[in-house]
Figure 1 (spheres, rainbow, N blue to C red):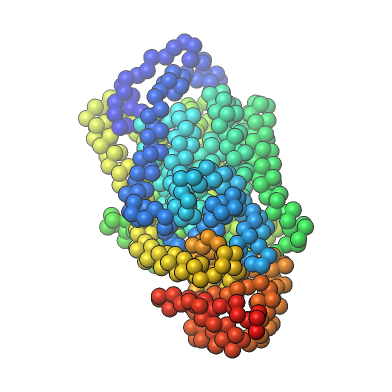
Figure 2: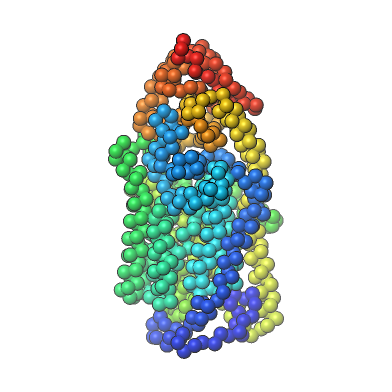
Length: 611
């Protein structure tokens, strides 16, 4: 009797002579039961809908008001601009409703996620609001991640029940809730096939992975190339490292050719994805505010082993919560690394893989499939740690190239390798208990409990979102009502100049204003134009000229530029905008509307032209 992952006993499968390969001296060929992997029913795919269901359970506002994303703050507002443009303009490269009077050439900001936009575009008939579209794509990405992870694990001969559990946990990593819709570009749908490709190359010619590499990994390289550049860069690193490990192990030429083909496709698609932005830079010049990244950011946003292994401080499990809170309190200056937690399963798998590095049997070419997969995954994890850890090779690379700086984002790659390591760790334990029925049943119960605890620990990070959900929803509904009132008072197509002026893309907030708060009225409007953001050089010249205009003359200068009103966010001023409002009134502007909470005021400029 054998146990696939220790959850339930299974009969020893009968092998077919057609499925067997004689073990060779180097151990590259061994007996496998191909029928179990190719003919097994794909019920593990249920991990995708279950992951979405758990998202609805963890995030209750999705059930009551799907149109409001949480948090409606910071980077979420910028990403919502793209989703709003998909609904209004059909694509995201040019947004005529922003950066009035010139229009926002958004493609000049090289954050192209073409595949994400294309998938979101398919959802637009069902979700006609930007917030609902953003939420829908977030849930879709979780489901697709469960499917790609599950298929990659099945390609590695992981049993179906283990595949179901691991794919579910991988799709709901703490990363999902810590990054949430605020960094929707960091969905990791195509990371599992890239990791599978790196394992295939590092395993030095496993024939049973050749077909999945051609039909699963290669297309994923193209899709990731047209997605966010960070995961394309990390994917290229692991594919190159896997190819080098394969060369060291004496891989066949076709494996090496496959590795360089995958790298070429990934690099070429990434270059094609960024080409429109680079062309705009060549034609119009690089935007003025793009030099906000520095080499030291590699240290600030680097990976930390402490975070990889740490439990959540939001977990309901008392001992783990105390450990997590101690971690946060002791290192309060940490930034992005806090979202790189692997969860309990990933942490156990990481320790198992690091231990495997010191086992002589894992380095032996004559070892079995599981031992060689462990060894390959361990070496890839070690390479990722050496690249991304604070003070690692990434920090050296950033002395030359500063655009890839948040190395903690490599954690989703490490998580896949660690999940593979965890499955193999448990399988070894189950093998030791194969002749002890009672102990095997106890172990199966313990494993089920461990998966449940691990899933609760991972989902507990949703508590941060739940804590602010009600306030965000109320604020969003107030904004919708106020913008609707403004649109009823102004003609369609009217342009509003937004004060105070804020920087873009780096925006740390101004006084009580949050980052990118000037995007809020656009997201709830249908027929108005807005002056934010100041991004292109042409727009920058217009804003600089207006900034040098005395306050009393500013209304006339704005009318000459085609503006019909001024939008004032009082939270952006120490005096609540009193001085600015007084100067605009002296220049002829009149209060048109004021929000119920007193934060926003709109001043009408339409009477100035006649006078």
